[in-house]
Image (tube, rainbow, N blue to C red; front, side):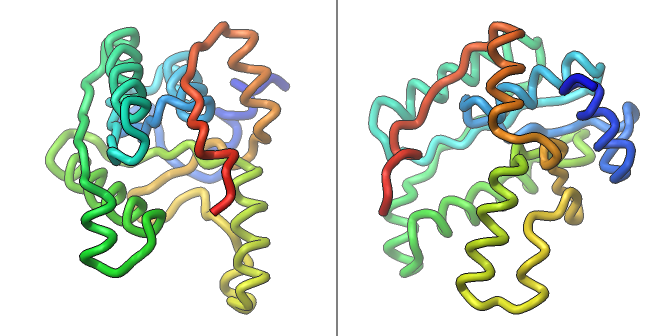
Length: 190
């Protein structure tokens, strides 16, 4: 079974959404979210694209925004974009950059979803992210509840790539000749 077939099977098995729904895809421009766009397009799902520029990586952040804008033009779908002063917001809230960015992102996605005709917010979390989450929760000692990992559906947020490994996504991108941007900070440790 190819990735497209597995994608549709996962969506149906977990009752994530139907062709009647319009999705708001959270797109960074990286491999995972670009593959999510292409899978949705090939499967015939209706979607819009949302991109957050966190202003954390200088010109790379702006490059990513432009790339995602061009992606939305390629798919001829609505494009929503916003920029945050993530550092200032994190400092004011006395929270980490990661937690601040996550909160800003999800609050804004929900605002866009609720004001538009989108039914669900779709993120590109995949199996490798899920494993990482379970391990982090285990080592933090969150107990049994924290060991479930990332859920395929949580309120209005759906994660239709949780079945796929990063290698699956990379193979799909190569086969379909998909361009994407690479965030150099992903390989850095804090």
